[in-house]
Length: 508
Image: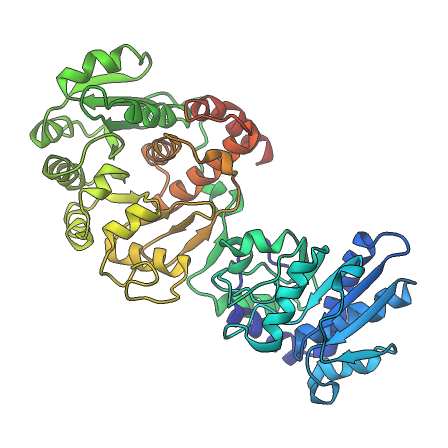
């Protein structure tokens, strides 16, 4: 059963087809899915409680009929309501409905849903292809207004399984049971909040069918975690030392704007880079020196100075952006860093300085051969890629999902993109992508992104490939936030890395 890789709606359809073609009847898959739902009904329904199962006209509704039958056979009080007419059901859904021996109320009215202790949403699954309207939308709105716990089947009705977007209206579920593998919409906002707790069930599709589904989902899409990048994570043996663990160079802004660079530098050092240097204007050297000890300092006033520094090939990763300032001087520094062909992380001001000039930045990266990672939040992404095929919805690409925007941006820039947020997406130029759900809202604090950029730079310095370095940094950053909890400030994050890395080492 899929744990790390995600299946699109089309890929899941291929899994079902392959399983059926290999000899597993569709009704057997449906019965297994319904059994998984019934298991959660038994866990959630209080003693003596009543469950209302709302069934739609397709296979999602068929899963609901099975769940209702099994719940009733277990002695629970279950009632079924059907959106549509029973005689219009076809295929496996009709077979599942025939196995339900209780009454079916068709054409669900505006009755008091609030009297039930649990509602099972088996109306529409992940493959919903248009916005809800009419009676379906009114029913979703009634379910939400009732305020009763909802168990969703596959995805909450109204949720786009590929993008996490709401199609007109969507059910707010306490829990969701899905099958074979998670879908992108389970992890992307706002879908993640609507799904509640996720339960992944094996319905017996088989590994061969799963492999066919994955083949239809190329390039691959992953749920971010150590399974994705752990094999490439730096491991330091007895013969390693500071010169074998890389040297990250972090560019600092002028006096009174140096804090962001220091946060990034401490992140790079804490994640394992052997050496870290902050390069700053001479006027800012005393300010940085007052706060740094293990991190070294070098003066750097211009792009020419940076080129001179990068003659030292031991400086194998460069981070530019946090607190650097925007405009031509920063563009020149980025050009110098990109031209050195090292690991390169661009964040914050370095990205804003190329507003609307994504193609120009891509040329610098390509000509210099830099192994680049760009770490924009939504606003920086919109500014940098304005007018390109990666644009935000509403600016030329209506309905374009976050994964697809990040993939297009990565291909355009020739760099790994970390499109930050509560559902951070990491995408590579070759189309590989990962969605991160390992984090916490407590990370939404000033300077948190600067530390993340430093983590990426520190991993690049240690030789980790850009896509894996970016994905690992995002996960480690999230893990640190989860370990700290409320009251987190950015200064806490580097100091949490020993605990995060220690737990990762034990896990592996």
